[in-house]
Length: 358
Image 1 (cartoon, rainbow, N blue to C red):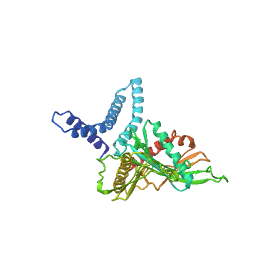
Image 2 (image 1 turned 180 degrees about the vertical axis):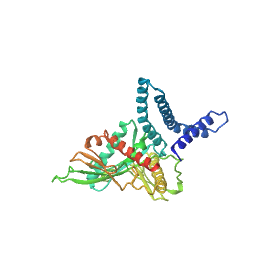
Image 3 (image 1 turned 90 degrees about the vertical axis):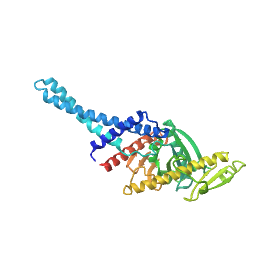
Image 4 (image 1 turned 30 degrees about the vertical axis):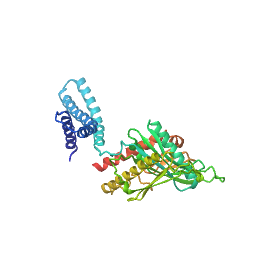
C-alpha cells in the first residue's frame, strides 16, 4: 500500500469517527469512550498529514507561479526562494508523518514498576544497585512524576539487595522502558585497599503497570503466606505477621512485600507487582511471535543483556546498544543527563522501525 493511500485511509477514518461522535443516535458510555479515545489518538497524525498535503499543494502553486512570472524578475526570485525553502521542508514533514503512522506501544502511556537488583559483585553490587535506585528516583522527580517506593531489601552496609518503586505520570513507561537490562559498574570499591578496579553489576527491570482488566488473577491460582517482617541481620521489624509472600502457582512467580505495617497494604502492593509481571510476560510472548527476527531490539527488556557500563575512574557512561559514550558520569548518576541517553535510544528505535516499515 502506497504512503498516500495509507494517509487517505487515516484521514477518512478520523472523519468517520468525528461523524459518529456527532450523530444523535444513542450510544453506550463505553462506546462513546472508545470512539473519543481513537479520535484523540488519530488527531495529531491527521494534523501532520494535512500539513504535508498543504505543503505539497503550495509547492505545486509556487512552481506554477515561477513559470507564469515571465519578465517579472523580482516576483520570480521571491517564488523561487519560497519554492526552495518549502522543497527542503517537505521531506521533514514526510518523516514526521511516517513516525506518526508507526504502531504505538500500547504500554507507553502507562505508569511503570521499576525494580533494581544487585548482581555479581557482592556488597559493591548492592551499593551500585542503591545508587541506580536513587538515580531513577531523581530522574522521575525531575520529570514531575510521582514515586512510591514499593519495597527495599538493604544489605546492612548502605547497599540494596533489591528495591522497587512505582513511577506514575504521563509517558512514564515510554521513557523508562529502555532501562531494562544489566548495568555494569567499574570502579575502586571503598573497601579495596590495593586500589584495584572491580567490576560489578546490577539488574534493572521496568514493567508497565497493569490494571485488573488487563490481567485476571484467580484466587485459586495464588498461595499467600504471611510472616513477620525482618530487617538487616534478621532482626524483627515489627511484632505482627504483616509481611506477605504471594506465589502464582501456574507460572511459579513469587512476589514478597514487607515494607508496610499493614498486611492488607502489603498484599495490595504484592498483587500490583504480580499483575505487572504477568502482563509483561504476555507482552513479551506476543512481541516474540510478532518480531522473532528482531533480536537486537532497543528496549527489548532482556534482563540478561548488558546494556550499559558506568566507568567511574574515566568518568564515562557507555550504552552498548547504540555505542554512545558520555563523559559526564556525575550528571548521569544524578539523573540530570539520563535523558541524553534515553533520547538517543528512542531516536535509534524510531529509525529502526521506520526502516522495517519501508
